Image (cartoon, rainbow, N blue to C red; front, side, top):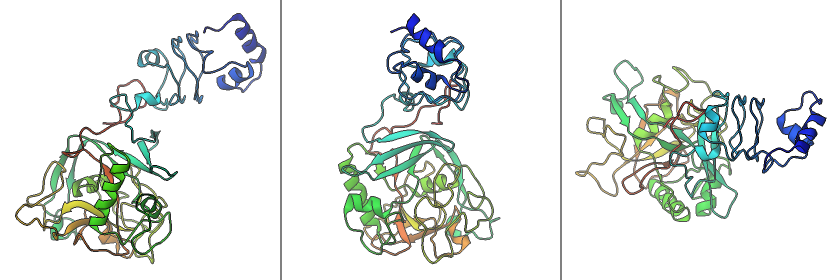
Length: 376
């Protein structure tokens, strides 16, 4: 419906209330945001900074409308063509329907959006209120490992080499917590620090059991342990220094040289929104453990060596842990343990990745110059 003269008179009767925004004025005028602004002429309206959740602007005229800082994430009816004729900037949040590259959210996605650290998506453990947030790691390349200029580097971190990712992937913003493990698998397998703390005493085989169980409960969820390359790429988050925080770290940034791990999400995130990538607990990766990088894939895939492959081949662990020193929690630091090994310093973080068996990965949309979007 269009705005009638009665609607306009109601708006005029309250417009003197200085300091009220568009949303408050519409409410005082008793206009239903779900219907009243369909096909409305809002030419030149000032909607700066407004949270327009629940508004339906289908067919509306937004020419010259100032949408700087407006939140359209839960708004209906706004099209790219409509927004292109309005005023906006990087603080304008586009409709949720624009978030996914294929315009269709995957069935496993519980919620999604953007914040100052970029795009995120959450999954919900079926039958519970327990959720896990993931952060987007955009496609690109990076230099993996260490060179001879790093005095803390071990030989298994060499040769430093370029790895290129043709597609992005989602990484859990924290390690798997005891709460998430219990919601999926039941009782924790060993030492318990508390529901918000990382699950520990989990071997590589148990982590794979967890992943298979959750994939069965959320069909289509492309869940996996990250490859070693994916892990380091996500840890560095575009940085080239020994730590994503720079050349040095403090205990306000990283849990190391400590008496116990920290709860997940307690410490500051890296530039891509991932918490506790350095220290806290060692994290299992998908790869078998090569002695160095001489033959490892340059496309970020998990490393396999058919000549040595067996059920007992050691698996890569990354990140260092709460009881280790600073050099052990560097971005390039590596370790390895047998797939049946467990410890109170060892857990895992999962990723949503495109593997040969998982099909196309649901990804956020590419930027198109219209409004705030996320990198592919």
